[in-house]
Image 1 (cartoon, rainbow, N blue to C red):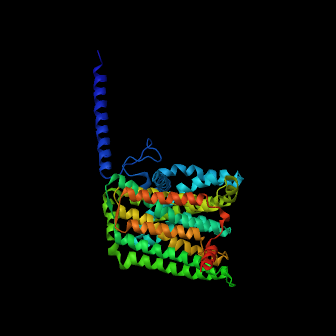
Image 2 (image 1 turned 180 degrees about the vertical axis):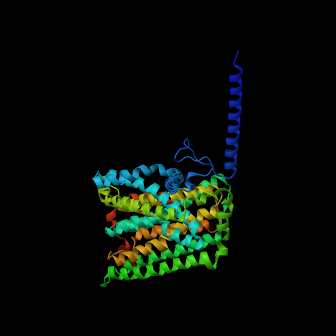
Image 3 (image 1 turned 45 degrees about the vertical axis):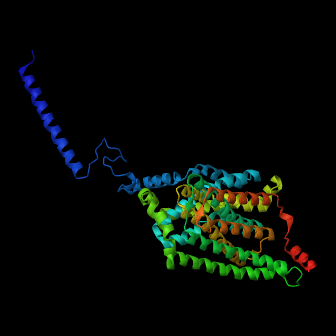
Length: 456
């Protein structure tokens, strides 16, 4: 038998332990109700027992690393092409160490694709915070930043043909390849799609003006063939004046779209914002303005480094792979620079948001024609590089015919898969023509004038 004294002592100890435990639970519940839990020796240094995320922790040494981790993860997961980011350090190392030109070109070619996607993502994030007007200006500046950086590097190195081919190729890839993919992908899912024909007509008219700005210098060059006047100096004067006028036209278009005639673009804006507020309102605020700005700076520097190695390797690629500079600048580089825009346009077209698709495809081409190309002409004027708007006659004719085809297709405000196939077919024919087009073909302007004079 158990000792009665021992039994009483045990029961007294149990009552004391139970009372202590109940008081402890009560204090714990009280603290939880006040939203505060006091850490003890069993609590980790970074652990929290409430539901507040570590990225919002009041302790800065916890908050900033976790916030950086969260933003980096969300940014990298924003697009599947970001898996190609592994080629960024490889491309830089290949160019710095001096690997073969083919390896340098391919690695940096693949590296620029995810950088373009991240640049587009950061621009969209920053545009949301700045509002419609500043956001439009920002998209105009960074929307074609990859092509601009590559062209600036090529212009600095005196590669005028690469610059001109890249500008023309960016326009053609957007109005033919991207728009054709949008019409084809959307047309296979929907019987017929409609878009704002007023907006499309305005953009197409500006593209026609841009094509005129290339036709006039080519025609002037042909007319000066048998003249004693210095044709190069004359073309530079014409190009500089035309570039200034085109920049003024683009600024006026921004004012027209964002200020004075916003009602014409209401359908596009409402489709692009109101329809997505339910599903993407929180997704639009992944990056803060400072984070988006820092991301833009870092990506721009990375693109500049990769573009430097890419352009430096083009001459060796032309010799070893027997590919013309015109084909590289007109077909390969625009596909890299517009990769993110290609995907975005096709995705929104398959969601039957054709106004957004038209804005991405034709709007990006218009930025190249009225903003980037004139800016490069002015920049060449400043750094003493003979960058003009005189493209080869063959290139000018191709550009004009492409713009004409697009205008005729979109003028009714409707699209289907057959129209998309026509645009894609036109782009493939043009790409094939420039694949067999040699760099030393020369200009046919003078020959055309001479033949005309002989006939008459």
